Length: 180
Image (spheres, rainbow, N blue to C red):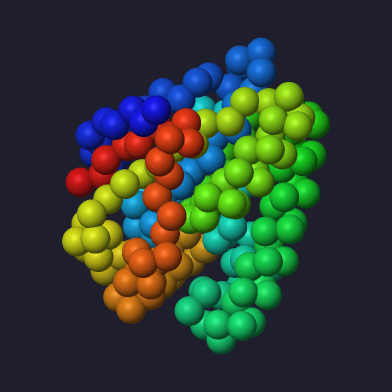
């Protein structure tokens, strides 16, 4: 069942303290520009270990996704995701609270991560940050003017492809937070 909440960009929403008996893995879900990294960083400040696909790619290759040709980017992303998967397994074994700063735009991917988390006796929370296309365009227009691991360039054309391909979570136990 979805729990919809209107939210401002800087609002910090309690998800569950990291000191719970069964640490939580928070799975961020949403299209580029929806606020996943901002939300994940707020949890990181509260003691969660943040795993970011964008930061993993940047650390490994030192450049923005837009600077790769599409096939090279997919290979780089797959390598970074494999590294993050291994890090997540280590953190699950250590009982650490984790926030996955990743788009989780396909249901099959969400299900695969949920199964991994549950196989380690941990609890997951799927946080879906939902924003309308105009809000995303405005945010990405600002973000595209900066450079760095958390400022991956997303063109209008790429955003359109993301909007078409995104599999919105429905009845997956998600908490939906509306972004405006």
